Length: 360
Ligand code: AHM
Ligand code: MG
Image (cartoon, rainbow, N blue to C red; front, side, top):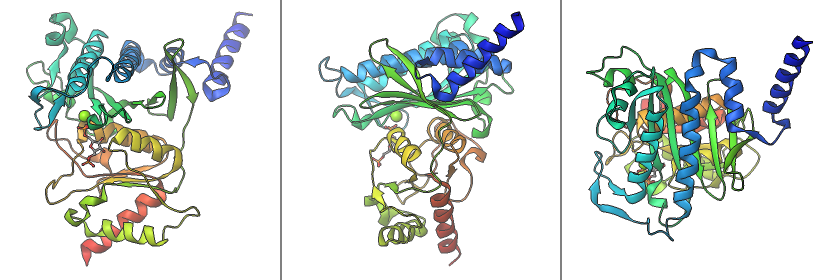
């Protein structure tokens, strides 16, 4: 009898996860997933803290104009020389405090922090130095969209620490993207979603404004094998170092694109929003290297790697023009990389153009 009840509970949970029950909460989902993956069970408070942070940042984003959260934080600039907006700073604090409070994370790397932060310093208590995991994140991706109310996001990734030495926290985070155990993003747009992978498929959760919780609304998302969207800031094309990219886009615009629908250019200026579009509609996003930015603009550790894990888990490809992003060695926490993500057909085709013009 006990066995039957247990079997029934498991069956109901599995059916729910497969999307039959639209009111499957994020919390319930991770409970079941972590029960399936006991080696990651310590991530329960971490994932819960990500849900809370995304909900809180979404709320702040919606109050930017009414609560005077627009604009820059004085003359503050980050380590990369970029102006910091008020919300960059607040969201960074929200993310690092809540991740560290989970106790399973002991070091965090953020776009807005010069160096990796030890959780024992963030919380000011040595008890917070014991977590087995490290978190990397960009608290607000697409900061220039904040004031105008256009889509923005938060990108996050979790690594199991390697070779950890408290005097050298860098050694535990400088890992290839293929070592990520969790990756995802939150998008703050007309609706707010969390898109998450724990290494076996990509799932999307949508915020219900009434209950203030995220619910599973799409599971096992697959990027179409090819699709119409192309997202490049091609005002920079005369500066691009790989000439093959311009030829590829010219041919795409002329109609040599190998799929049925007309190509559509869409560019939001927020990687999360452009990725979200590609994931649902198929196509290609690219931020190439250029004369003024020889390594591209996007950061490998906390932007390109988590996004690439999501894209690959959804059946797409993510490369730097030549090789797989997730295989790239990470030398510095803020290092940049050219990034091309999207449908298999488009990324393979772009790679061929880059190679062909490279050898010419
Ligand atoms: P940010 O993290 O400072 O907001 O910068 C990253 C953003 C990406 O989201 C986006 O793809 C890119 O910068 C847009 O850059 P550009 O305005 O040069 O096209
Ligand atoms: Mg950012």
